[in-house]
Image 1 (cartoon, rainbow, N blue to C red):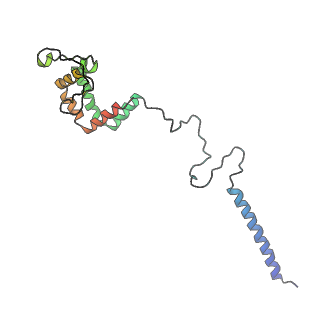
Image 2 (image 1 turned 180 degrees about the vertical axis):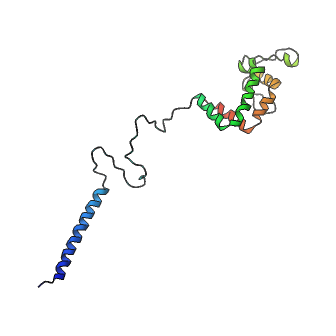
Image 3 (image 1 turned 60 degrees about the vertical axis):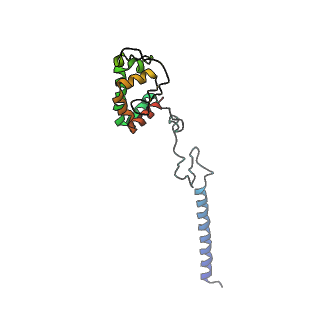
Length: 178
């Protein structure tokens, strides 16, 4: 004679085994990435779990690595935003050159009429423009005629910019623009 207690233990054991097997089967199929619905990508769990493979990138979205190069105007605008206090100082040099040194610094014809300064002779003559101007360590980079004219007429604006660290940084930024 068997007791009821042992048969219920057997039934309970069988039920537990079935539940365990079903639960394990469900868990395995839920974690598997080998089978997916047609066309539905599945994100893998793990270190890169924050990257969701279900996000579709539009073909018109540019690659971050394929960035469009900055235009000259965009670059100059960026430099101005990075160094706003220096824009006016930098422009003061161009204003002085346009008013007093147009031929030698703007048109760059290599001529400077020093007659306006020291007696009427032509002090033009092209060299490398490597002379430091107005007590700064910066030259015009144009030629000797531009350096001479800048020294004669534009030292206040020149020193106003090129004795200032931020204006020097702005100048470097502008010079790096395309």
